[in-house]
Image (cartoon, rainbow, N blue to C red; front, side, top):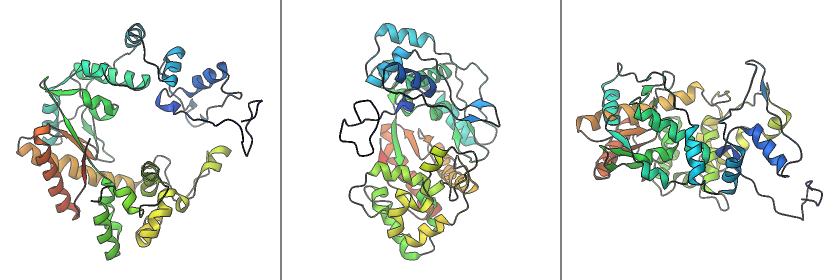
Length: 362
């Protein structure tokens, strides 16, 4: 960065740092104003309008600027500020979206949710951004109304509910019958188990089944590349699974076009294709062209995940009278029942896809 605040192509000046402003507040327009006011930005960025809907692609949470600045600086709110913030949080008072007609498993989940309470003392100990704090308080209000919004998405068969649609910190606040906290498990690289069907090469399939039970499936699938972070590979793996194979230029700005990376140039593809060339080519040949990755291919994988994690595991746990609430590719249960639930999940995966999942305790 030069003395006048501009950037040089080969900078020899100050080091630049980036902030994940989106995690603090999604009202980017107001963020630009704040950055300008504080001398951190000289040109105000503009939002992309949606010409079809005539709306701006941003949402305002009406969080005071001084509180946003505290979030950027990672400062704690005073009790007075916190109290004032909570006053402005409005809870959705609409009707409960719960639909129990389709499945006894959903009735089982609904009964368990009816036994859940919220530990507000635990909330005081969680360090989270203001926007997530507001989101959690809205969920708490909904739970207190005994409205769980429990239903299945008709397109993907995935389960939706207050506890699933809230920030992950919310699940740490749930208590069964006002007493017991829940243990949470996660199936590592879950969707890759359902992609085994795409593997026509026997050696690659056998190798993939071993990688999926390694200490870190994402690194193992990519051959443990040196100098590449696990998180970078995991994030890029989503585009490998569901990202556009064809860059759709319609409606993209010049900046977005310049940042669009061809499918085969994505980080995860570059590394996994060396270890799994046949599988990678099969994935690249899938016709996926959707900005939100909701292609028929992606929805089919989600349906398979839901069939196991929601229907099959849920039904077996219901019959055994276990505490089980699915969390997409994971679950919540009592600590004393965690090992048995892991056995049930493993049995269902082995029967459905022939592979054994690695389950991590969060």
